[in-house]
Length: 375
Image (tube, rainbow, N blue to C red):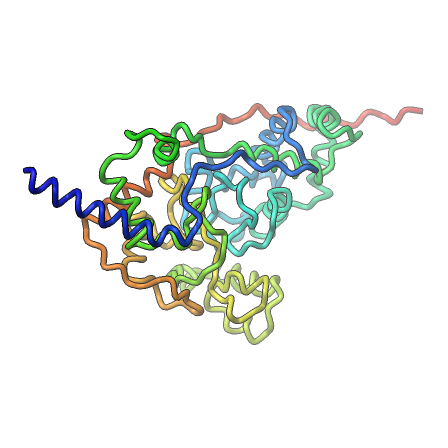
């Protein structure tokens, strides 16, 4: 028995040494810092409460059917649980609905990093053609015919009437409350000195994460994401080959994102970052998602092709897929079954031990006619 323990201790020490050598090249995993709050949109309890109502209110969409929460449900990891996000009625979306958990820490939002703040993310979703499909003037006027909203906007922003610009600021303020509770995250407790927070399997998994598995190369820092863009060769979603509505959306996205006709005519893959840069070297690149709360946020990848984290680890174990501009960081890992189990155990420790759930808010009532103008 002593011999077996000695062999185990030597093996674990070797893993930790290897992991340390690689991990030193990258920002280490660490507990999340306080949520960054922009100076031009400070949080207040009243603004957060208003933002929560607006996040749940279906009137902030084209046909009153697509509130923010329809694609970001607390019970589904603040995503929608599908491979491809639900689309505006009559359409289908073309990407997985990313969780908004800890989105307050990102400096680039959406899979291709097309916006740089939560204040800009909200209108892109509410007004997007295959998302909320809301018209700014119509949504604003709806709010102005609801007395409770008129009063709330006056209290929070000091304006006579609700404005969508302020509505998006309130939604952003609320989203900055959808963050991990460090006291419920085993890794965070471990990092703060709780020696019992991680079990032996999770500790071995952390050594693999920082070493042999190479996860730390991209999933580093407090967010467990370097927020950069890589092509890792994710397989295409099969629906884009045989689902007409997905094909319509796919080609429409190409067209409205302004690619050349030659690229549009050959719309076979999701080009990711390329849509923003138009640099051929960026085709197939997507922003690294955080591994925090990943326990609750499947399916995975920009098109939801992997249902489980086991499948994700298997994908990386073989070195990813072929890709268009595949990163050189990926190489076959040749992990043993026990190593995969340990790695998954550690990744699990980056999530809270229970999901973050917010109760539905009470929404304002029906529209009311505006009072006559004061003479």
